[in-house]
Image 1: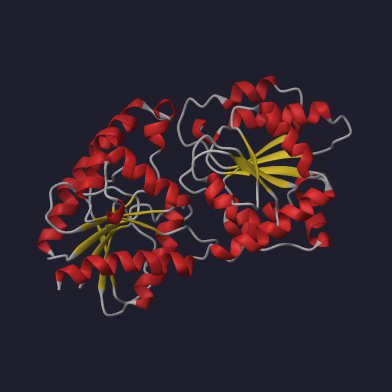
Image 2: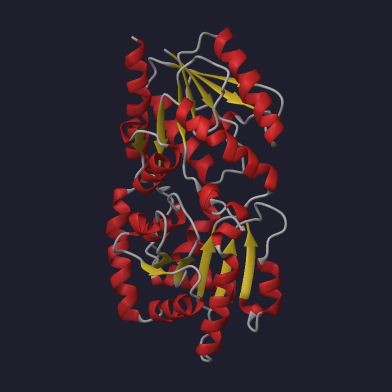
Length: 377
């Protein structure tokens, strides 16, 4: 069978959450299924690092799809023409975008519907596109994949998609993440914070991630603990312009203890994450939250949100806070510095992390693709 895949998020050095999902899943299913041929559809020049097997044909379709107008052209014209011309059997889209001008069966991975719950956190032109198109993508998709039971129920309720049409494939964890010894952690902390302990946040710096309230909570934590020499490291880049956290940062009493590290890659990040006091990830909304499980596998306690998919992913192995309760976040930060609490949470986290594996993810994704292929035979 011929399987075309939307691989426009496979950009060397720029992989984010959905990009990593695309990378890890495709690397496995293309190598495990040489009986099928895969066409990787890029919207710009690609890296050979993403051509995982001999049964892959990379194709660049124009224009570059990075704006709603260009999304429409790329998916509804460039992609649909390619699918028809090459007699593709199935189109798989790991980021959820589909062509609405093709009869080829399609599979959309809709990771979450954050824009339906927090529309104010997106630029207007992006929001209009999402609100108009994603209900259509969900209905047009032959089957829908998502990354949590929470998102499955959300897609079902908001878009009236039958539960029987939606499959769940949890994200996995990059095997690069693992605990460090005490001496190794000391070396990392010496290099990054001159030996001082630190909390860490990992992810894009946008309003949905609740950066402002985490900064306020850290400031309160420091003010309530005059003896604390903790820092707060933020790893990530701005997703959109006009973010509000900079005003909060400038007004902080302890802003000198906040460090913005920008984007880091897994080989850089593993030591910094594994040496943290805790991951602070109290987002407003997550369809999954990959840093939660990465921290658990690294032997780092997790403080996360009580809402959306975060309790499902964290289970009993994390501490939870209401995203708007700055006092509670600060109090929980203080709690996680206690050795007996840390030890308990770390132990539970290491055990829970075993449930999240990219091999399992790829197998579940393939089962969905195979269901569609089987219906074509």
